Length: 316
Image (tube, rainbow, N blue to C red; front, side, top):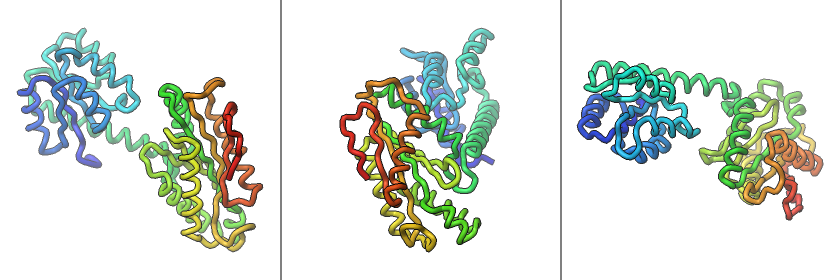
């Protein structure tokens, strides 16, 4: 059983072939069609199909070049591609496999073979995604784990540098969590971590924001295309959410309810004068701000200016 109704994208300039495949597959799959290469590339990025059926012979951009571009794009590189073509020479098929295709279907298309190949590759892709999700998920909170965080922050640094956009990193730490565990017990401590994860997810709503559990009672939030002011809005919202929730914490040193402290750093890559920062440098900067927030009374956030930032105010 597929975990959901799989999406199949057909990219082919032959309307007759598209109609035949779409009519055959639509009872079991969500079928998306594109009659031109550029349209197909856009659909692949936006629809995120589970499988792409790609014609080799198309005007302007052939299927090989489309496949090459799909595999060069982070958003589409993992989507399986099956070439649909009248070319059955070994060298032609070898070229397709070298570009990253997973299979070939030759024309004229046998419907039974089409269904078998589509069923096999959509299932395999969904199973792969499920395994990757499990490997990247913290089992207690359901958030991304440290491994996923490390992969994502490095990817976003490269992306932000390439596109000359802004990137913010927020490190969140539960205040007096040891005292909470000691008083309420580790079972309640686990419940507390789950509740904190839920509130952080509620604050970071965009699909591009990544909330991770870094370990223990520490969390990280990667905010793409977000400047210092935007990150400040998120941080204030988090403080408000915890104040509204008012989870009891009678052993807290400063407040009668559960709170968090936060430190964050923001980088405008368009104005970056130093070398490209790495993951460790970003985390260290956010940790410095977190340390000031803890020492400043907890239940607050502080900002660490990136070297070269002309505004050196470290407000909270």
